Length: 399
Ligand SMILES: [Zn+2]
Image 1 (cartoon, rainbow, N blue to C red):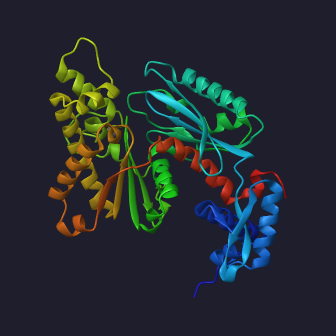
Image 2 (cartoon, helix red, strand yellow; image 1 turned 180 degrees about the vertical axis):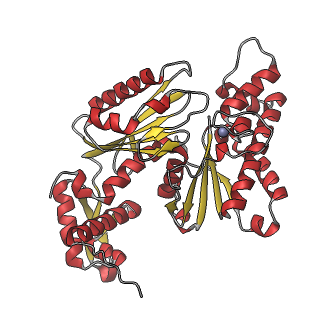
């Protein structure tokens, strides 16, 4: 039997225990100290010490009494949402959003700004930092602990920069993570937008925790997938995993900036879909995605037909994912899913059912995300909160 030659020191164990307790409180909302000890398998004295520290640091607070066994009452503990905040940023090809979140991922403030693909990315980046500064000013006395950033397209995790954003060149020269850390003097965490969509699903749905293989698909201005295996994100060596937008569905298809041909996102991203509708409608003035959604609702046949075509292509991409990962659940979110969830799910179900073996189909659930707000922006807040929960003492600067 192999003997591990690395030990875990006392500080590390304390950090892991704190992380366990604060994560459980987040999941459960309110717990007594006894419940926390029982659920984490920690000694009650350990839980008491952790909670005392958390109360002193302002991370949790006592919230009245819970009734327990034999009529005993115990004090309820919950996350303190009054003091600490994180910033979430979402960058897309056509806009950026900045949100202010408390430790439960509740959004308190947000701003969204449209951008133009002809704008210099350096100027857009400066505008993002200005919007973050404005939000920090408006957050009042709250202490902001970290920033999470959702970015589209492949990116280098270690360097904290985008490698390729199709339709919008120039971002690869900006070290987003490093520059934001220097400007705001706080930790910054960059993550692929689809991975953050998957995080948001995991946080806000208890069923998903039980899933062995869940894939969240961000069907927006690009197409990406967040792959959760037993609740953990599968990221790949460089963090590129889930770049399904650049898997080919036509080997001799349209040329893509990534070097491949027939990339999925060249057939079903919201940008490609909007262009296809405008081409078919021959209008003098181009219409936007929001107007197309309204036209589909009103029964416009050209828009509906183009939407079904895009959904079918997405379904073909999903079949490739299913045959690669054999997930039990697929959740589709972002701009394309919001246009008409019913048409999308009907079209994708039909496409997938026709193309996968029956045993796989019978053990698969495909649904549209039911998180009302921008789940990827929420995910950007969640990645920032998650890091705090991994090592709370370091973030609140005490110890
Ligand atoms: Zn590509």
